[in-house]
Amino acid sequence: MRLAATFLFAAALLTTIAALRPPEYDEAYSIFLTTAHARPPWPTGIFTPVDVTALFTGHPSFTQIANNLRSGDVHPPLYFCLLNEWRHLTNPSWFAARLFSVLISLAGLTALASAARLMKIPVIPTILITVLAYGFAYTSITARGFALAQSLNLLGFALYIRHSRTSRNLLTFAAGLAFGAASFTNYLAIFTPLGLLTSHLLIHPFSRHSRESGNRLTSTFTAALGIAIFLPANLYFFLAQRSSRTGQFTPFHLTHALALLAKDQAAALFGGLPLYAGNFTLLVIIALATLSIICLIAILKHRSPATFTLALTAAATSLGLLILGIIFNNTPIEIRYCAFSLPFIGLLCAQIKPAILRNTLIATEALSIIGLALAPSTAQPQAAAAEQAPPNILVLLPTGNDGVGIPGPFIEAARRNQRIILIHDAALPDLSAEPRITLATLAIDNESKQAIPNIEAELAKHWQLVGETPLTRTYQQRGLHQQP
Image (cartoon, rainbow, N blue to C red; front, side):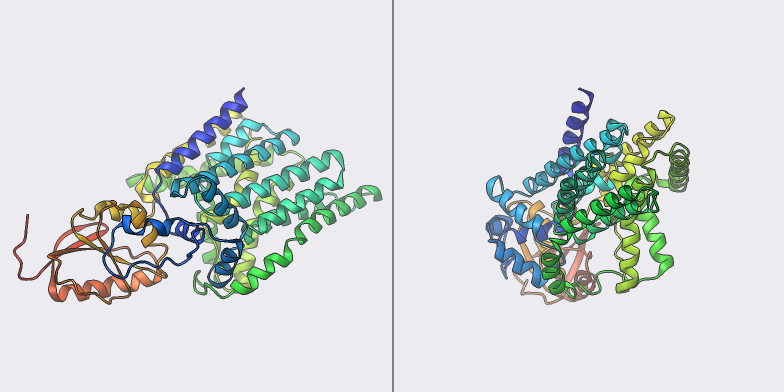
């Protein structure tokens, strides 16, 4: 009964956050990729959100999705194909796309609960620590492939742990298939099974019993075989995509990478708690660091036979990101990537004693989740800019890198009759018929960061600034009397 209540809580929590969070940059790629036009053909003149409703709907074929991904993205297709069918069968809304991630994450938590039970780890604390972790909750409500990759990894993990109790190699092959499907959803998901299989080989590697060693090698091989089935498909997409987003990450420097990794891993657990603290930011950081150290000591003190496996599986993604950075000379470190480690951190922390320490960790995470749902400081600005734009004035909206990540969320959140015109670079259209215009100052990707100052410089020649919000600037034609 308590476990059912825990899952109901998780479902209600994730659904609520999915409803409250504004639409995001990367989600727009998911939405438009599943509408048969990955790069929306926006109108060249003035339009309203009502005029472009059709651009947010559609039902492309698998071939269209695959071709669009190979030519202009960095992800494999499994999630997008499933999302495409989900949106076609249910509802094409942004919220419905997020609900797909929520449902998948709940399925992943079910697999996690099964693994915890098999490992004799407290199930309810495991679920609570995982679902209340900022990074897990965030990826569970976002219309991207992280939730599916995470859940497939958890399914593979649960199957592999079940094999260790039954010695049925068919289970390890099934686990490998789940891990392979996770990599076909997000390439970075592969680090989790690599950590698990490595830990399995390293535990008592020189066993006196040849049969035990043979079983270990056989189970590892069969799991790897299941993963390898997806390797050709992954290569088919990865080799076509490998140079599609050069410059996305900063060049690699070990010191910077380690600092960023520590920061994002902490944020994956505790979110933006320091951001909400105002003058007490430093105190909050010290408190969180102290709590983390005490929890780590408690894990080491009360370690179980599974501690090594869980620790290496949890650390695998971080180690993998550092290795990728060294190989490709970039720094692919973000909170959503660090989230792959969180269920295994949840399994480790669920064993913490005394219970008051574990409960303190859960309560601290709960505070961060409130911020995820409500705090503007953790939300992207497109929807806020749409809300700040005056309702009866034409909005100049920068297209950004490719007309997806900035316009999509802004238009989704804007008033249905809001007049909008997209601005490419700093090339302004004829605006002489408009007594006032509003510029959405959304400098959130490379193109928009370059364009906004140039647009403002062009406007300053013939327009006078008459109003300003954190995300908009309103101008009036010079020579016109300022209206109240």
